[in-house]
Image (cartoon, rainbow, N blue to C red; front, side, top):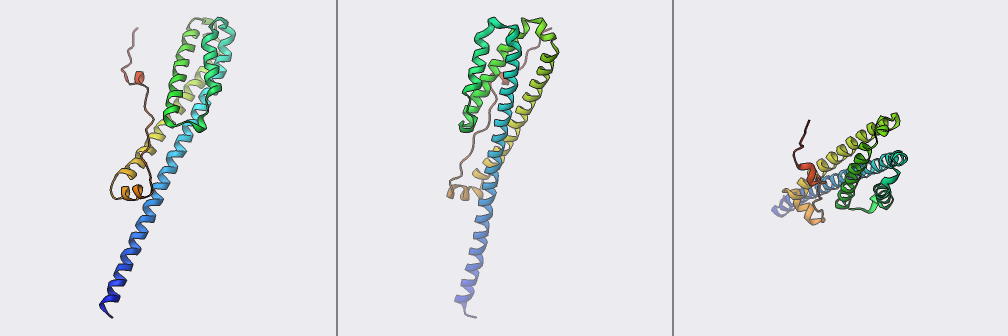
Length: 188
């Protein structure tokens, strides 16, 4: 066998392995990106569920707190203005922060009405809210975990070469609100 044929065969084998590596890396990046999108959808589901439960809470509180109309209307307006499908992760963080503010405002209203706190339906609603909040936190953790995995692939060698070739870009993490980063002060 002539040396040129051996050289071409070796070059072909190397080319074949490079092609397999490119395809494998591309598929791995694409799969990680799909997981990020799926996790972001999980946040959308959790936020929607949160809005639904919050809306029910608003309806329950309305009967007891007619004069707290401004806070309740703000929550309803926020609920009606949200379009999660087209929102970026930053916009979803902002929506979540606004909903946190609304929850705090409603909790202040609830403190003013002892009868409401004693109402069995309201107690069940509070349990539902706790479950919804836990679900939302879990969705955020899953999203951030998938973003971390994806960003590692986008930024670390050698998969960053393929990521750059096919324009894969690092994703943003879902970041906790500033006030939630502070230590909780408990006074008795």
